[in-house]
Amino acid sequence: MSTLKTIKEVGEILHSAPITVRRLIQAGKINYKKVGSRYLFSDDQIQAYLQSVDVTQTANTAGGINE
Image (cartoon, rainbow, N blue to C red; front, side, top):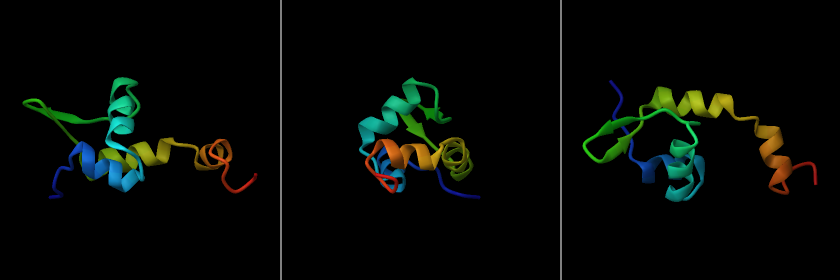
């Protein structure tokens, strides 16, 4: 069984600030489990989010590969 990750840990995995993870939650773009006041994420939920993101579009809009 994998351990659940916090917003901060997910931010580190996604190379994003914790506020960005909170915005993903508010937009309904990433699934989570809420335990008390904490938002927690399983590895499967993180993987599902990563698979749903179009990496090439993200890289292009961020001044990435096809600049």
